[in-house]
Length: 202
Image 1 (tube, one colour):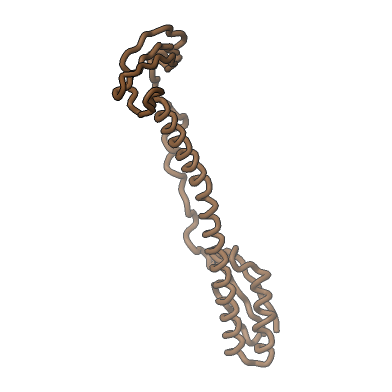
Image 2 (cartoon, helix red, strand yellow):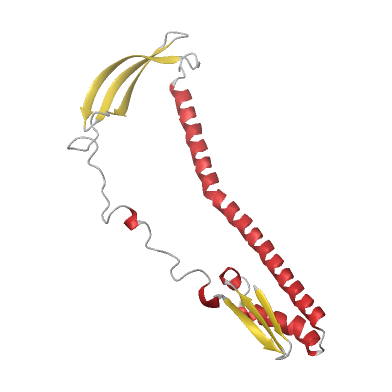
């Protein structure tokens, strides 16, 4: 940023580059000049007028930075909500899976979780779904339980023509020729700042 004071023409000019143009727009520049600089300058007090303007700019930029950091913190907390929800779903899934496993291993006779799979007989295998008659035996009291269970047969994956496939090929070449020549015309050529700014007479 450049602050240009021309005392002979009684003019103050702010020139903001591209980095400050969005943060310090023309309307804010004009407001700072009118509120803090024009009165001292109109009285010929160049030092205090310039100091008041610089302090006002510094205060504005600090307030902007504090607000940006607060918004960034709020956004980061908002980004955590999907992760927390996903973690909660996973924990609930694990909890119910554990309860199901515990119920499955509990002997209905002695109530101990000591059932183990001791035998099985295939009933049917249709479209990759296996139905079995499974015998569970309690290692504590010897009680046996017979259950019908279904499970997926991984050998019937439902996708014909073999597993996997050919490579995925993206057209147009690899990454399009590395970007196409940036920064033409030279940096800061011709004395042009770009960006914005504002000026005032006093």
